[in-house]
Image (cartoon, rainbow, N blue to C red):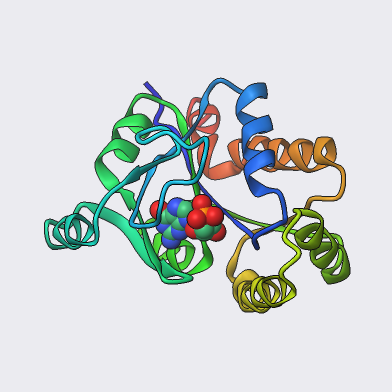
Length: 199
Ligand code: 5GP
């Protein structure tokens, strides 16, 4: 069976990357999302083992020591990591696997798995992003400014990604991601078998 592809998706808080990923998975059953481990508190509505594996700092350290992570990073005081084994198992089964991770982890994956497809989801403008963060009902201006500062840092790393997808209209953003995945599959390096017959 043909192996699946590893897809890194990053983007600032408030850009709607989770919504894009969810819509993409609804459209394409061959796409699976990796479940990360994190030390952060569970939020209302989140389910352990579905949204994240919520683990202690000690357990996280132990996973690092056992080299269980494909990548791991710190984000606003909490630790996040991608368990490597389940990702490889899904790839072997032919699924395309999405890692929805922040940029430090994204860079690690690009280094360790150069074949990974990397996408950065951006807002149409920084003003729109600020508006979305405020519109989340978070009236704490200081928190909004902190998230914007974090977003600026992420935008600085964005040029390292292969693609930038703007999430203005959700439908368009999902179609753009699908177009990228389709074009990647058509790259000459993945179509060698068609040429070999003639040689
Ligand atoms: P949240 O706490 O809001 O769910 O996620 C905070 C940030 O951590 C988001 O940008 C999310 O994409 C990122 N993140 C989630 N899981 C991982 C992971 O396994 N590794 C890394 N590096 N970042 C992650």
